[in-house]
Amino acid sequence: MGEIMFDNPSFDNHEDVHFFSDADSGLRAIIAIHSTALGPSSGGTRMWDYATSANMVTDALRLSQGMSYKNAMASIAHGGGKAVIWGNSKTDKSDALFRAFGRAVGVGTWRRVQWRGRLPPRGARRRIGLLCVQRRGRRRLSPGCRRNDEKGSCP
Image 1 (tube, one colour):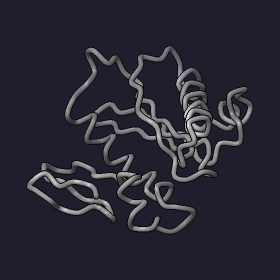
Image 2 (image 1 turned 90 degrees about the vertical axis):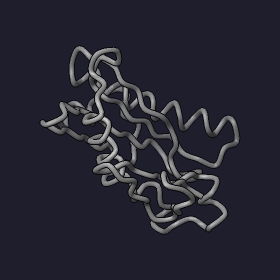
Image 3 (image 1 turned 90 degrees about the horizontal axis):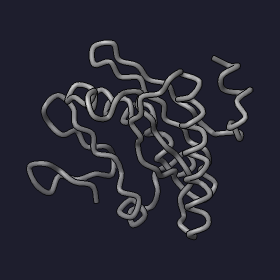
Image 4 (image 1 turned 120 degrees about the vertical axis):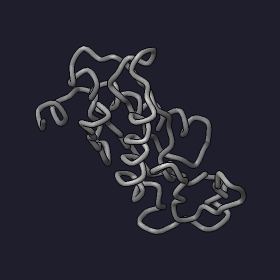
């Protein structure tokens, strides 16, 4: 795996790259954090039917780096991060897949949502929109989230 990562031309000293798989749901995902120099990383998720795992890694690295630059150019106090899921977005979507992905996001990246090792100030938490993860039919709230209604929401 090291040769896929560190020798990849798209690797730009990314801070974190997390690989996730879940046999029951078929989840294969990568969450790449390029930079948190300006603040917590932000970015979305792409679901794509990659030809190889090396293509998936390259895409995650490029997309997360692009988010760092996009946020910096827009003067947004966030770094860059991006997640990719290997699968056909038209045929492979399932509740089980997205629940597994939610668990991966909640467990694997919570420390990167934190602001340089500590929770951000209360007002910044509202702007960041901390994670609320669906788990086992009920909403589990991450630290910093509150329950406003039956579904729960982030501050």
